[in-house]
Amino acid sequence: MAIQASIVTRDTDKIAEKSGNIYESIVIIGKRARQVAVNVKEELNAKLAEFASTVDNLEEIFENREQIEISKFYERLPKSTNVAIEEFLEDKVDFRYREEEENKLEL
Image 1 (tube, helix red, strand yellow):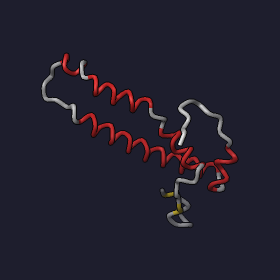
Image 2: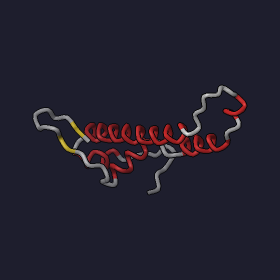
Image 3: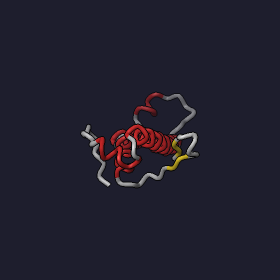
């Protein structure tokens, strides 16, 4: 999946047709974006936890190239909102209503 990292103009009609309402689509995309962001953050924290040290040696902290490369890799990843929009438009996001009378979305 090729996700664009830059700003892209989106067709709101295509986004709206998936759920029947642009606002519902935005809520779904927003919830999915939060899920993606949390997953990426947990993954990054797990990888960086390996480098956690009890020593407060600044030279050691600044010279850890592997830790810097991991951080740079995660900085270059596409934003979670872009991932969520692409997944939504490609029908990779399942959504359903909790109850019809509540009219709230649940992922």
